[in-house]
Length: 178
Image (cartoon, rainbow, N blue to C red; front, side, top):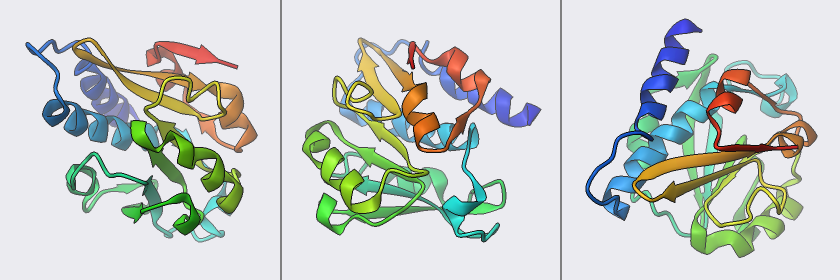
């Protein structure tokens, strides 16, 4: 656990890294690293994996994929608590199926509610880029703030989804709402 915490701090240290301009080319590799670290500090109930302790932990991208394969490369070959990580892509909410994580790019905000209705919100860590994402019931709002990447957490939405977010991750959030 200590090694994972050091890795999280190193990744989150990227928030303090101040490049001249944080563009999309720089933003999405950093966001992919954040997502990888988020899944290490969230606990899902066994039922989220159908009781299979070796089932993949699936990260779904709904709508446009702004990572252009970067998220796939970041998690390739990695596991979290014995679960191999996998990225799934769904062009729209109507294609979405249950998974453990769902990412909604800024242009995919309209996909959030339909995807949650289709998959059921239970045990899904939702991550979105659009302003107001946590106010709409999303769990983590991941965003660029000037030259930094930041995140807000909706602890109430996480608890409603049956997820436990580590206090270490909560401390690093810009804002935590209940």
